Length: 146
Image (tube, rainbow, N blue to C red; front, side, top):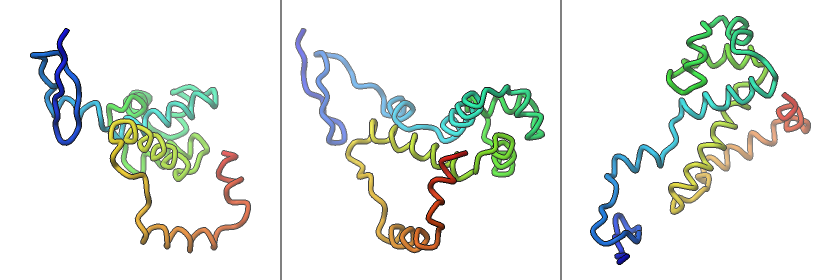
């Protein structure tokens, strides 16, 4: 089988002669993680690690079981208030959930966008350093224990 290079946006792929490149919109669907999907995956993983049922968490968060299920499957966008209620029902800080979501998204982006640097802008690094000085020494241990 004869293969030929095809270069699009600086990325070269070797395709069989006559084979066409997938459409850009189709490629983007698979390349970029969807925030609601990642949030749902994290919430479901936390709930399952705790050995809790959808019914139990939905009751404690005061959200319908069906809606919570749709949030976990990434089919519904949860409001910030709803996410707060779900996190409270799961006894985890929202920041912990969001950090896990951000870490998962960063890993996905690294797989699909290897040329994008994984760095923090200087202005954010400076502010983070200031905040880190203000936190108690055992903060990392507290956040990791939930």
